[in-house]
Amino acid sequence: MRTGSALLAVHAAVALFALAALFGKWIALPAVAIVLGRTAFAAIALALTLRIRSRPAGMPTPALAANGAILALHWVSFFAAVQSASVAVALLGYASFPLFVLLMERPAPPQGVARQRYAPAALVIAGLLLIVPAFSWSNRASQGLVWGLVSGASFAWLAVRNRGLVAANDPARIALWQNAVAAACLLPIATLGGAPAWPTARDLALLAVLGIVCTALAHTLFIASMRRVSAHVASVVAALEPVYGIALAAWLLNEIPGSRTVAGAALIVAAALVASRRA
Image (cartoon, rainbow, N blue to C red):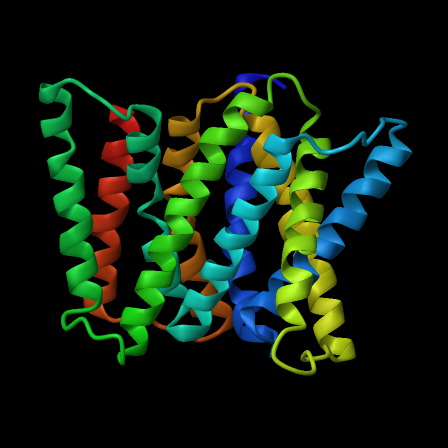
């Protein structure tokens, strides 16, 4: 994959990730159940892809297994954000992830470099305050924002870890085992506390699209692109996910963001771009 193709692959993956947020509104299931279905369908699709390509799936390494658990945390927190608040709030909380990438890739920067991080951090804080002017856990927007930040931090952790794995592994194999382990982690959780919520035929169809198109395909494209682009370049493109997602939510869900949300989005996306550039 050439660098230009890798950048296009990142954009396509991010657009599909943004579309995935809408499934949190379309599927009437808890976040854990949605992610369980998503990862299960994705793992099946990826296993079939490897078989058709006559490539061995092998067995997951401890690093891949750990990434699967991180992936489960990322997606559960993301769909919890969507269901607690709105697609816009969830995506804007998640959009803080380039700042986490910056911190994780350079954990101990020189003092001058550390000072440069204050500007994007201040932009993120200002943007979040615009979205949720009065923070309270009883406020659903606040809940969604917190879950979105957890989603962003866990995705940054996953992106940095995958950067070290992709050089020596088939991206489809990485995506397969991360999704399979995520499903295995979530299966016992989904069955705790009594009878699980069973999906309808419509839910299963939506989960199939979510797992195969918005997960298996998108995840493979994103990981494959990491062979040519760094984690911080990928995070620049990923900063556009709120833009894609908010536009799709306005079109397909009629979730029209208010002026404060738009202003907050502008600040957070700007901060993500600045942080990614300085990575």
